[in-house]
Image 1 (spheres, one colour):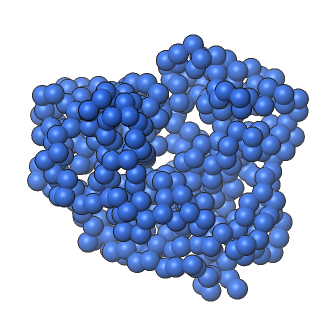
Image 2 (tube, rainbow, N blue to C red; image 1 turned 90 degrees about the vertical axis):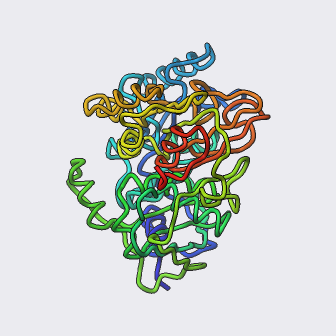
Length: 417
C-alpha cells in the first residue's frame, strides 16, 4: 500500500519504512514552536519546572499574541518567555520589533519547508502545511515534553484528498476556497487533509497558507499541499538551498477523494458562531449591516491580502459607522506595506492599521466588539464571544469581500464594486 504525503513525513521522522492509518508512532520533530501565550496560561506553567532541554536548537519561541502587551499579566508572560530562552540557550527567539504571527513567522524564517515535521503550541499550526510539511498544534503539557525531548507521538489517521481543478475567478481567494469546502463537506475530525490536482498550481503561496491555516477549523490533523514549481520558486527566493519535495505515492489510499472546481467558486462567508456546514455564498448574506471589519491574522494578513483591500479602497472612503482594522501578519509585511504605499491608502480610506499581532483575532486586544455588534473578519474563528461580547456576532470572509463591505457598510459581494 502506498503512502500519502503526511504518512511519508511521519514514517521518515519515526524511522520506519512505512506507516498506515491506525498506527501510533513516536517521531523526532524538526521544530517545537511556542508563542507568548504558552507562558501565560494559569495552572499550565509546568515549563517553570524544566531543568534541561535535549535540543534547544530545535526550539522556536516568539512574542506574537500580546503585542504590545495589553495587560500586566501579558507583560509578565513575555518576561517568562525571555527568561526561559535565556536559561535554556534558545537562539530562535523573536521578540517585539522582530515579530510575526507564529504561522507567518514559520514561513518567513524558513522553518516551514518540504518534509519537515513541526509541533506547535497553537491550534492553527497546520498552516505550515502550505509548504509541503506536516504540522499540528499541541497543548501546553505536550509542548513542554516536545521542548524537553525533541520528540512526540502521533496517531496516523486516514487522509481526505481535495483534488482541485480550474482557476479561481476574480473576487475569490484562498479563504473562499476553504469556506466553500467547510460549507459543503463540513468537519473532518480524526482525519488529515491533503490537496492535489492541477488547480493547485494556480494558487499563490499566500492562498495556500490561508487554506491550510483554516483547516484547523474543520479539525484536520494535518493540512498538506504538494511542493510544485510555484512552491519551489518561493523556497528558492526565500534562500533555501536544499529542497526535497514529498509527493504522495500513486497508489496512496485515501478515505475520500473530493473534487473542487475552483473556476465555479464565488465569494463566501461563514455565518456566526461556527464554521462547518455554516458557510454560504456572499449573495445569501448581502445587506446585513456591520459595525466592524477586520483584515489580517495568520489567515489573511499577508501583503497579497492587504494589496487586495487597498486596491478596492484606493481613492474612496469606508462607510460611516464602520470601523476597519487592518493587521499585517508580520513586522516584515508591515514594513513592506509602508514602503509600497498600502498603509497610506488604507489610512486615507479611514482604516486603522495596527502592528503585527494576533491581538484582535483571538479577542485579546485592538478591536473587541460590544453587545449587539456584528464584525465581518478575514480572521480564523467566529465562535460566540470570540471578539468580545457574547451578544455579538462574528462572520468570516475573504479580503475582497471585507473591502467591498467596508465601502457599503453592509455585507457586499466584491464583484459588484
